[in-house]
Image (cartoon, rainbow, N blue to C red; front, top):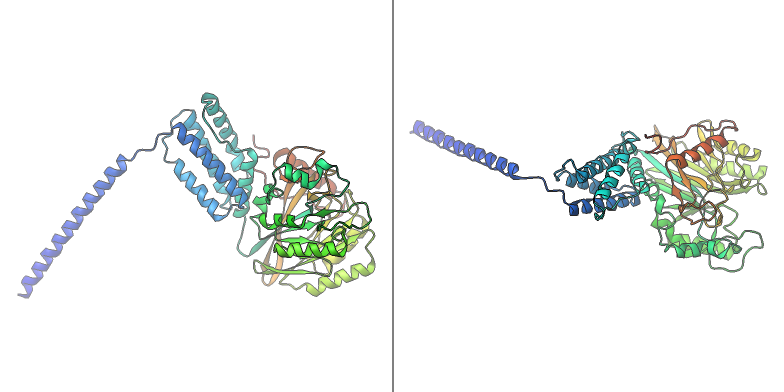
Length: 486
């Protein structure tokens, strides 16, 4: 009886196994039939228009968000969608084929090991294919993003790809004000230009978003009182911005402002109190002489110190106080950054007191020194492995209506902790023009990060003005996917 049961069970198992195998074969044949039946979609004019519109939308989102995860997923999804079309050897097929190559080049930047020129190598063919398609089919409504839109999306993805665990990236820019002095011609006053351009909270830093939104912390020099007060100090330049314009900062990824300069008090104590209130209401961190800012950024305690130390202000006692405060704050496992408002306006190189102060401040323990006030780029020095940016120049500066010095930059510095000690991992420059409308005499107060020859010109200027000083930096890292691409 036991033997019979075993035989019956064996027969039953074999039958079940046989049925399962037959079902599996049948299912496999069905799936193969379905796959064979699936054909790629025809590439119609409507499909081309839709995919060009989607491309423009995703490039803009990628740039504006600093290539956040959602925008990267959108890019991957767009590439997947484009593979579903049947591409013939005609103008439409050639356009989509070159669009795919350009988008894949963009995507490669987020991986962290891409060829910097990946986009530049394929972009000309994309432009040519688009032009040929438009010439053949003029009625086609192609949405063709500008080269700047491709550049900004590429830069945001490139910055994301450069991120490493344990590192933080800080972005610094120079003088900013969202107002002008009373004697400015009416058509060049910040508020009038802002209104004429239908400005919103992201107007000023619109082109800076790929960098401001891909870092860990962005710091500006806010060289203005932010107040509605009318009574001003009796001096030549009185700079005032509306307090509500502080909203530009959180809307654009700016986390902090240095207030240690010679214009914060232009409207007396009441104007300064209004300034502090405006920044507090918009949750933007500030620091000033006697008011250090201590933040934990990416797990690293970071101390920001700011000083107004112009020619008329400096002294041995002042330097002694600065170095004492640096020493008091500095530990091996934290970061101390000193902002100095100093020097001579429109001078290319530092004067002696700046170099003496800078060396003493770094010797006291500061990790880097960021300078402002000259209203133009000045020399950069590497002193014992630490950078001195003598002047970052103007950035979105409402008090420079006639563009006395148009070339500027963003300065991105990476730091990390190694064995309990904070170390610098590198300095990257983002070459930038102070305005975006091409004028060389009238400011639209919207800085424009640039590529190609304009970027090379700014980098060459930094090299030229850094070469004459001791320890001057003459080699720089900056991203340009188009430079020297044939």
